[in-house]
Length: 314
Image 1 (cartoon, rainbow, N blue to C red):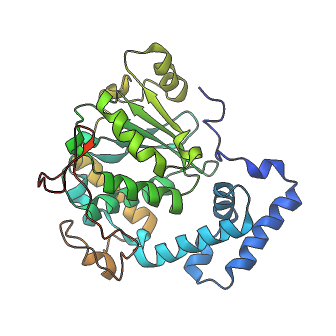
Image 2 (image 1 turned 30 degrees about the vertical axis):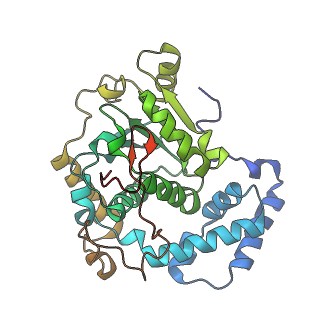
């Protein structure tokens, strides 16, 4: 396993600075940000500013601009107000969920199963992603800033995935959750996924794509990555682990998420902003979701873009 894969910051720019230089950069960002609301001030901790500086290779102005965009996005999108009941329908099949286990470094683990896609709602799929990201972050230990993704491609075909959702996923994660991904393990991807990944990869920053590792169950060398990263007694059988009880159960997971909502937010009330977004088939509000693309996604079949005249939906 890459020796860097367990570090909280994949960039490590701060390690090349003296403590004084490091704090000076953080203070420069704070100065450029200007006056903030109480909620924004709480978000802009030293650790958060460090992640944005790392994402922009220590460039203060670029990091500040990126952080300002995130503060604007959070004020509009209100990710901290998303509750389980709003995204429960999207979660029914276990297409994305937080695993019960962590890796050996205490990082939370998000399991993703593209073949379990159960809706065609662009908005709904991004909402559940953001909810899971926020939940995974809240469950990180104090000494960790990053998480691990396990992406299971069992049963996958190209009808399960959307280029538009993939582009927006990359945008949200890179622009608003920088340096949160420690490692993404793509498990048993079919050959057809390679052509799709080539289309998506240009939307990923190099430091992000470098964290994506392909693992195959019949390849001992790539399997060693999982063995080095996880206690195999706790890992799901689906990923070569020995824990047959670690699979997804909707009722049990719903209970866990309701408990988390209560633990972290004090109540499970859906905000007025979120309430009218609860129906995952509803249209996106221009005023609250204006950062989303208006252009309809091109359908994908067999790894190639279809003709606009083809009405088959992804």
